Every structure is written in structure tokens, then in C-alpha cells.
Amino acid sequence: MKVHTYERAFLTLGGLLLVACLGALLYASLAMGIHLPGRVGQIDPEALASTPPFDAPGVRQTGPGAYEVVMIGKAWVFEPAEVRVPAGTAITFTATSSDVLHGLHVDGTRLNMMLVPGQVSQNTYRFEEPGRYLILCHEYCGAGHHTMYGTVIVE
Ligand code: CUA
Image (cartoon, rainbow, N blue to C red; front, side, top):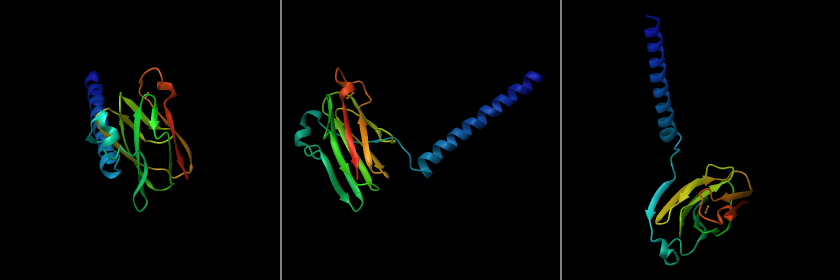
């Protein structure tokens, strides 16, 4: 009899947790707009030099208070290695890899994406605080992986 009671209690608890987690997930994606970095397109990794926007990596203004950072990851650098963006604006990172799998994580932020050869990744972030932010490659990409980093300067 007691065993049944405990079983029922645990099943109920499990069910409630499931509903709570699903609710949190839906709330995060629908109400807060949090989602995985999008895969926005495909690209020939050997033709980056002649394929916009990767033929001209760097920062460009895309609208009032909106900027785009176009970045290429390659063994073992980010190109460009340093970007300057204004604080408090929407910065969209559009990035890909020209060779192997790399990662792009801006330290201290939720900006985190995979750079996959042949695939264009995109993620938008707003830097509220001016400063220097380290860009790290977080995917093992060969002998120089630990030397692969860049800088975002927020002014
Ligand atoms: Cu690029 Cu690790």
C-alpha cells in the first residue's frame, strides 16, 4: 500500500517536472525570443573570397542602431581578428569557416556559435558595456587551436 503511494507521488512529481520544463522551454523561445544560432544559408567554403558578404569581412552598418560583423574562421585565426562596434546596438555576427570546424564564442556573453565549412551561421547580440571582449575558438581545430582568438572592442 505504502509502495503504491510513493510510486504515485514520484510519478506525479515526474509529470509536473516535465510540464514545468516544457513550459520553461516554450516561455524562453516564444516570450523571451531565445533560440539557437540560426543556420542562415550555405556557401562554397573554397569561394569565400568571391562570395558576398565574405569577400569583405568586417563591420558594416545595416540600419539605424544595427550593425553586422562578417567574420571568417580559419586555421588558426579569425578574420578580421579585431572588430570595433558601438555599445547598445544590435550586432549581428554572420560567420563561416573556410576550412575545418571552428567555434566562435565571445567571452562573457551568450554569443556562441559553430563555424561550419559550407554553412553560414548568424547570431545577434547587444553589447551594453563598452570594453574589450575576447573571441575564442571553442572547437578543437588542430595544432594551433589554443592560439585562435580575436577581439571585439565595444566603444
Ligand atoms: Cu579554431 Cu579551435
